[in-house]
Length: 52
Image 1 (cartoon, rainbow, N blue to C red):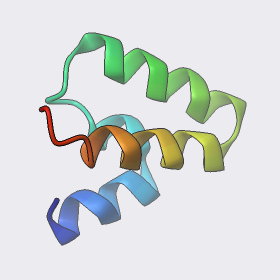
Image 2: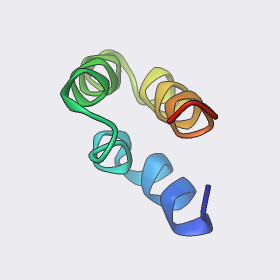
Image 3: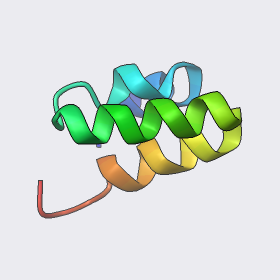
């Protein structure tokens, strides 16, 4: 996980996971609409997943 990706996930979480697939973008976007903190946490979890 690069510094720029972490910074982007703090500023706008859906843009940080744009290369992880449509499902990840939708989940992070919906959580981001519910609140900023859940969106950031979801984006960081998805970015930190070693499988992808």
